[in-house]
Length: 129
Image 1 (cartoon, rainbow, N blue to C red):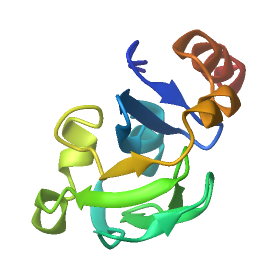
Image 2: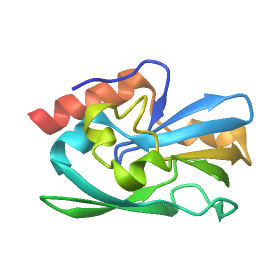
Image 3: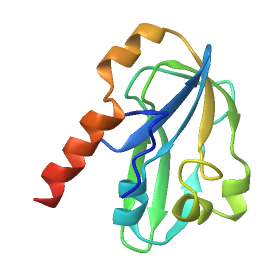
Image 4: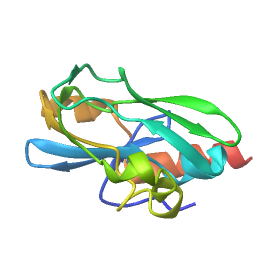
């Protein structure tokens, strides 16, 4: 499983890439692999305010339907509209082309509630065992 080094992680397998006071959010390689072929994603609406760990989207695959939670509080300022017609981009490129939303962060200190790439890697090792 790929664990990107430039993002932070949640226990629910979301990632967040912080760039100043904004951030990109998506699901991890582990999550997309566990879901299998992704067939649909319900994106959040631009302008929506979200609290940390609040549901922001839902995703469906051939195996299951799951909720996606925001790793940090903020306002959705952009969604990846490519996913509406090509949700499988998440399977192919979860950290690059398959991002879900861009948010304007409310509180940078919330990142203390997230896992580093090393901590997330250890979580994945515990799941494999």
